[in-house]
Length: 362
Image 1 (spheres, rainbow, N blue to C red):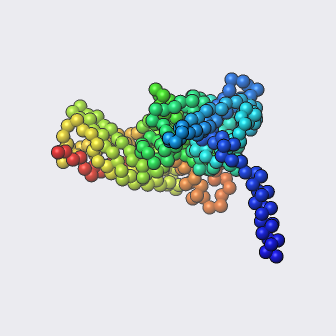
Image 2: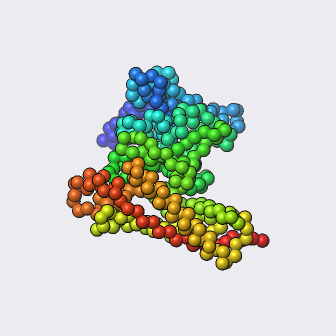
Image 3: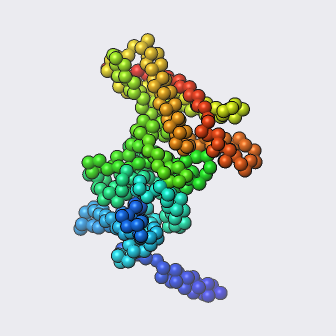
């Protein structure tokens, strides 16, 4: 009996080993880019940033990469053409970033999201971003500080390296969920190339049709903090006598929907705590209160302008619609009703800034 079981296991191992490909017969795709091509019959331009590890003697392995490109009638068609150009199997198990060209997203956001979600070998925790221009141009850039292909972007989105309040992180599963949910629109980071370096400091909101509403640097920071209060924020104010920069690290944001009022009122209360990072002049304790009032006024104005902007563009990066629908018991028409209510919503913003420390000088 045991002999029969052992023979069966040996056959199973041998048969399963036939489908396994050695590492030297694979090409590891680290970045996946999609752009709009100049050919209307083949509108999809696919760029794959592929790692090609090699070794120089007994020293440290040198990381090289190549960008494989091809056009196609669909994403799968272009991928198949790329496969015909190489002698190794494309492996997406290490794909860390999906980069969408700004010209391919409008009208195709749903299809692109659906295609990636159907691929079993692409992880749902892959980062999604928008290129300021062409994704292929970003992938063909090799920053001087980058040690591995696409690694600089990955550690920026993972927040394991630099921590910047202007960097928004969006996973593939989050992007798909927010794109198809009624009452919220996904916000994607925008990647641009400047002097052969990656620059991530702005974001774009994707509406239901895939149109992009690009945000400024200050607006991106506010969206990041409102959606995730644990993130830091920098507020700058100028007066005739002084320039003040405050880094906030304790943010408490409360959002309340007053559905009993007509029109509906959304109250946003922001309690912000931080320390002075920079000041042209020395700040006394009396001047601290004046500075707090200036910061409160500046922050309130910025938030109100941002809320009005997204409302006019009919996008909702903060999930106000999700909050409203959660308050409607078993109502299948709540999503449609929110579309009618949102343009008439009144916003009330209240800010409270507490400067805990004016800094330490020695």
